[in-house]
Image 1 (spheres, rainbow, N blue to C red):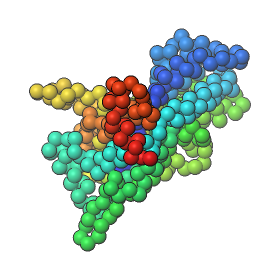
Image 2 (cartoon, helix red, strand yellow):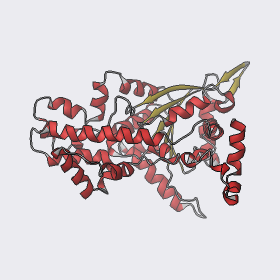
Image 3 (cartoon, rainbow, N blue to C red):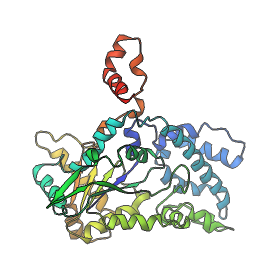
Length: 369
């Protein structure tokens, strides 16, 4: 059985890293440059900083600032943004000490074996039944990472092969040890094959800027699926295969936005293709259930329809797959909350109040020595 997690920037932000586009833009707009094209680009960002919190949308809009045939000049801006973004994210990701938080990592990832737990009885039993029906198979946890950082990879390396974390199950006389399956960086990493841009040409304000020598390559570097295809690593095909072979997909830390429309459409088609498939979505902004739960139900419906809104399906098909989309506001990786801000040296403070506050950290540090 394959359970696949789609991991977005919410994972890094949960760790306490400043990896939102708005964080990077605040840094990027202050960089010095002598290049006139880049100066103009920086000024545009300064004047429209709030909009650039949705940087992939805005990079498509920024083509409007160029004349027909000026694809090379646009590509210079696109490339400079990506190169500096990679450097910034690499620096941010260095703030986490994975060995120091190894116990927290184990606690968080062990919850992969109880993903039905946060839901009401009926939903929980439905999700658990899908898992129970596959007990004659080995269980693999796959990860499709939409981040450029290696934070997820580092966490997985800590718990790789640890059956106390990954879990086991017995079927007849056979004991299956659960295992990590595939980890794919769908949009590349800070080191290679970065994919940063739009979903398709409709999100490019002025595509005619690419009417120039090598314009097809400049445009290819802006459209995500084409960028992946251009790297010749079959990342897109490998990812699609993982989705197709999954029984449950869990989305964590991703906004359901138009620049990744390809993936939401694929997931809807995946749900529509087999009635035993289920999708779980973590939505951090879910309200409390409350006395009558009406606010929760409204947000739940809204979250489901954000996804099915990308489906090329009939209305009755959308309603059918919405029955197999489960929304939770419970953070599966809560044990890793603000991990980057936990200092292994904090317990050495001479201030008594600080020492007391970090008592658990002191014990944990001693245990790791």
